[in-house]
Image (cartoon, helix red, strand yellow):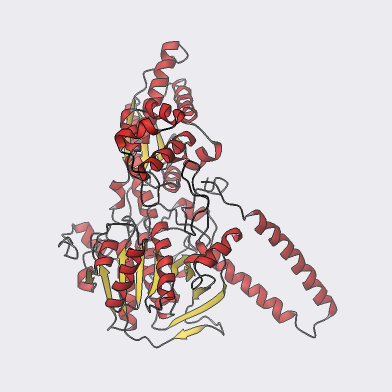
Length: 600
C-alpha cells in the first residue's frame, strides 16, 4: 500500500481556515442517548420484484424504518439506548472519490468518542483491496486534523469498486472477524451500497456479529429514491462545474466565434448536467434520458444541434455553450446496441483487433462510420457494472465533428449562409471531484457519519444512513435509517446478444425524472456570506421528505385508531369504513400502475 496514506497534508491558508469549520448537528443527534423509533416493516418500491428480493435477502428484507428522535420528542414506544459499550468499527471508501467523504469519517469518529472514548475507528487503506488484505489505519483526531472539510479520498485511498465475488465476500468477512469489528461502514454509490446489502445478508447468514452500514456518497447524484434525497458530493460537483461553465459562457460571449461542447462526469444519469444547466444557463443541454425516451439517433441529435446553430446564426450569433452528460453515448439506441455486441465479444475473449470482423453487418457499418478515436474508446473493457467506460469516450468531440461536417455541407449547398462553424471541446469531471466540499456537503457528510453510529448502537444490519428535509436548515433535518433492500429493484438487463433476461436485485442509478419539477454565474463555493447556504436547485424544487410523510401518515392512522374503537357510533364506523375502502382502492390502482420496470 502507498505509504503516503494517513500522513498530514500540507495545507494552504484557505484549507487551514476550512479545517476550523465545525459542521452542525440536528437536535436528534445531540447528547449521549440514542433515541430510535421503529416504523412498519418495509417492502420493495416495485411490488413485482418483492418476491425475488425477499428470496435473495431472507435475513435482511422487510426490516423496519428507523427514525432518530430529539430528546424532547414524546414517542411512547421509542427505544432509548443509554448504555454504550466500547465498539470497534471499520470504514472503507468503495466508490469513486466525492467531495465531503472525509467528513463521514469525522462525524463517525466524533460520535464514537462522545458515547465511549474507548471505541475505535479503523480505516481500510486502499479501498476494498485494503479491506481484503486487512490493511488498516486507526482514525484519530490527530490523523484527521488536516483532512476535515477537505476534498478527495487521499486519507485512506480507494482501489476497486466492488465486493462481489465469493472470494471477495469471504475476504471481507475474514477481515471483520480477525479485527473483531462490531460494524463495517461502506462509503459509496449504487454499486457499493448494493455490495453492502449483500455483505450484510451474508454476515447475518453466517452469524457474523459485524453489522454493515451504507452511506450515500457519490458525485453522480444518482443514488436517489424515496429514502435518499441527494448524495454527498453532488452539491459541490455541480457548484464547481457551474462556475467553470459560467466562465466558459463569458468567454464565448467575449470572442463570439466558438461553440463549446462540454461533457460532464455523472455516469449513466444526467443529474449533474441538469443541475449545472439550472445554475449556469448554457444555450443547450442534451439529457441522456430524453434521448432514450425519444429514441433519438446520432443523426437526430446532430440535426438538432445544427438547427440550433443555424437559428442562432440568423440572429448573427456564432457562439454558444452546449452541455452533454457522459452517459449520453449509451442512450443513443444504435450506439448502445453496438456496445452490447462489442462487450459480448470481449467477454468471449475475442481480441480487440478482431472485434470489427466479428460484428453483425449493421454494427460493423456503424463502427466503421465512427471516427477512429471513438472506435478505439468503444473497445475499452467495460466497467464492473458492465457499462462502457463513459469517462473515456469523448462524445463531445464526436458530436462536434458531426455538427461541423453537417454545417460545412449546408454551407456548400447554400442552405446555410453564416460564418464557418468552430468548436472547442471540454470534459469536466476530474477537475471538480477533488474540490474542497461545499458547506452543505461538509454538514451532510458529518451528519451521516453520526447516524452511522446511531445505526450500530441500535444493533441494525444492512441499513443505509438517511437524512430528509435537506432543503431546510440543519436543525430541521430528519435523521433515520432505511434497509438497503427496500431501495432495490429487479430489472431486465440489455437488449443485445448475450444479455440476461432478468437481473439480480440491486440498487440502480435513478434517471432524471423528465416530468419532475426540476425540469447567472454562481461563482466559486462559499463558506461564509452570500451563497454559503445555497443548495442544489434540484434538491430545493423536488418536494420529497419521504420519511417525514411516513411519520405524518402514521400519526393519521393512530388518530383513526383512537377515534374508531369498539363502542364508537355506527355513523363514525360507517364513515371510517367508507373512507378506508376508497383509499385502499385508489392505492391498489396506483401500486399496480407503478409495478412496471422503467426502461433506462
